[in-house]
Amino acid sequence: MTTISNIYTIDYMKTAIINFKTDEITKTKAQNVARTLGIPLSNLLNAYLYELANTGSVHFTTTEPMTEKMEKVIAQAELDIAAGKLSGSFKTLEEMLDHLDSL
Image (cartoon, rainbow, N blue to C red; front, side):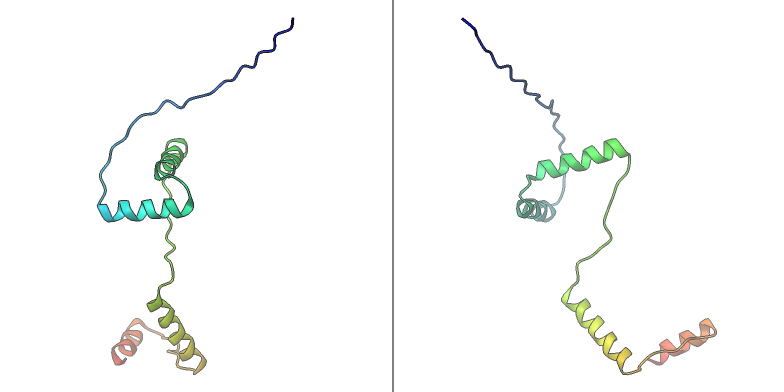
C-alpha cells in the first residue's frame, strides 16, 4: 500500500506591537482612505515601516489635490493672460515692488 502525504508549510510573521498617538481626525481620515483602497490600515502602516527600515528614507508627497478655490484662481489667470493683462518684465526689484503696490 502506498501512502501519499502532503506537507504544508506556513510561514507566520512574528509580530511586534507598536503603539503611537495621533489625533482622532487624522486616524479617522486614514481609516477611510485605507477602507476606500480596500487595504487594512495596519497593512499600510506596516508597508511604510518596512520601506523606512529597508531604505532608510522617508517619502512624503508634495502634490495637493486641486481645490475649487484653486480652479477659480487658475481660470481667472487664464482669462487675464488671454486678455493680455500681463505684468511685463522688471529690470529691478524696486520696479517690481512698485508694480505690486499699485495693484
